Image 1 (tube, helix red, strand yellow):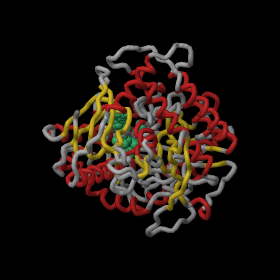
Image 2 (cartoon, protein in one colour; image 1 turned 120 degrees about the vertical axis):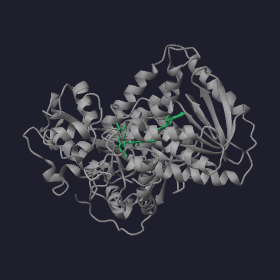
Image 3 (cartoon, protein in one colour; image 1 turned 60 degrees about the vertical axis):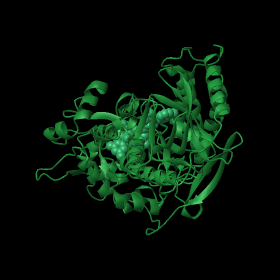
Image 4 (tube, helix red, strand yellow; image 1 turned 30 degrees about the vertical axis):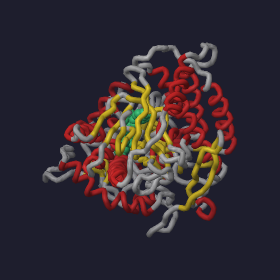
Length: 555
Ligand SMILES: Cc1cc2nc3c(=O)[nH]c(=O)nc-3n(C[C@H](O)[C@H](O)[C@H](O)COP(=O)(O)OP(=O)(O)OC[C@H]3O[C@@H](n4cnc5c(N)ncnc54)[C@H](O)[C@@H]3O)c2cc1C
């Protein structure tokens, strides 16, 4: 049975950064990913990485972010960005040859380093090259799917159970520490900017093991997604100066954010767009969109700094964005919530860490600033890796009998494969879940909609337990993985809806039309959700405030 000091589940930016940090500390490290590492969703990140200002991040979070964690992230940011440059990331340079910075939403000055609009790809490939250098100390389990966490009798995390996607073989892995770096849960929504692999696996596995989830009600809608597909047009476009226009050709952000205009924080811009659409000033089919006008940016600059979205516009909307406006709307993009951790990535379960989008430190609180996620993945990926390696140095390898759990997960997979073909299909349930979340747990929410979402989720949970699949084989059986992922997404959606019902105020990405004001007196606190028996249990934890008392948020 494989055994490692530090076993990292997920090989996006958070996972790879954690692996490199733990390897540098001398630990024996393994990194596992359900897809090849450079296909991890971090590869899609476009606009850039912030060396963020702490106050901007606190304000962006609508004062729900934990200020101690934000200060750590922001004070370590410049060093991390320089480190990336030193290991080979070809950040864009200005005419003087210095690292160029672009404007991003909610930032008081230009703080976003970028590689055209393929920043995630550039970072991920450089980190993977670095991992190659450490091939003697870092074992890679590529195309292995983790099904559950192993725990000893005291509840400590002691490894994972996983399935080799290529062969269908099940295996137990022991580890002194497991770091979850499994990304977000965007696929619980439809449409979403997130790829098909972003299914909340890490969040659900930790939740099922007893770890609390935090801020799950905070789901980010990005202001500029293509209307039909939900494909993202990077905030970099507005950073370069693009305008948002309604059907009357008005720059309506003048009303919502007279100072920052299109570069207000994402929750503010998405809400302003949705109001235009709801009040009949939308554009495109059914008036469901808003114009993003990139033609105001010099064409040469667009072709150089936004070349990917020039291609996306042509391929997915038939629009040359250098010559005409493109129709966009708010779309699900990111979850601020996740597995509750401290600033070293530790969860309350001993031996279990989490970093990146799977985690909630909480540096994003009610709303994440654009380009702050890449920063979060790297800072807290590194810190988790370092901390886990240090912990490993002072302990023995856990001795744990893995047979029962290995058998349980193998039997569960066999049961899925052998389900009679008379229930609903996995894909149908997934579509219903996503569309329902996009209706009731979106930019605007209310009690009635959220309660109906909760009822639907309860029914879908039942149906998912019987959903059937086509593929009965062992080699690359993506069908069976899809059925497992559906269960993970339903857990995440349930936690989101329960949190959104609980929070009876409007803050950050949570706008309750029945409670339209922010209410610091009662709700300046995190909502934590733990699994109690079969269902979610709600509790609260305080927001860490160091320097900045909550104040009215204006852009
Ligand atoms: C289109 C788009 C553009 C974006 N642009 C930006 C940007 O410009 N700047 C910014 O800051 N943020 C951006 N973001 C957000 C940012 O890209 C993500 O939040 C971040 O990359 C997440 O990184 P991660 O390492 O946490 O997870 P991911 O990169 O999603 O990696 C998750 C890893 O976990 C593995 N995994 C998951 N489940 C399992 C399992 N069961 N078993 C084994 N392995 C598993 C996956 O294979 C993968 O390796 C963007 C997001 C999108 C969707």
